[in-house]
Length: 150
Ligand SMILES: [Zn+2]
View 1: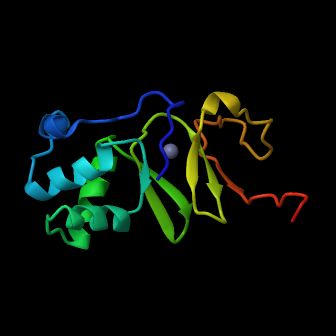
View 2 (view 1 turned 90 degrees about the vertical axis):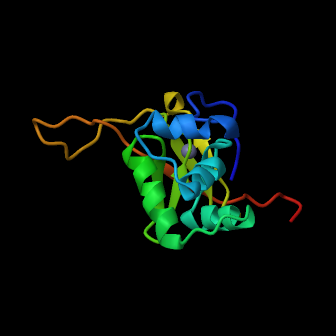
C-alpha cells in the first residue's frame, strides 16, 4: 500500500465522483460496488481482495468475499484496474493502469512502482521468427542489505 507520485496516469477518483466514474465505464452503481470503488480508487495503491474486503467492512458496508472478487474482476475487465500477480498465491489489484513495473521487498512485503522508461530489455533469445515482444511485466524481488555495523 504505497503511494507513488512519480508515475503519471493514476486513476484517482474523488468519493463524490465515484458514481459517475462507474457509469462512464458502463457499470451500474450498487451500494457494494460504490464502496469497493471508493476504497480502491481513492489513492494509487496495490491491494489484495482481502485488503478491500476489510476496508469496505470497516466502512460499515456488508460485502461478501465473492462480491469483492467479482467486482474487482469487473473493474479489471473494464480497464479501470490492473491485476499484478506477485506469486501464485498473491494477486494484487493496482489502481495505476499505466504501463509500469514493480519492486517487491520480500522482507517487508512492500511493493512500489517502477517507471518503465527506466527499464530496457536486452535482446531476448527464444523468440520465433514471426514474434515480437508486445509487452512485459517485471516484478523485482529485493531484500534489505544489512548495514556494515550489523
Ligand atoms: Zn503498480
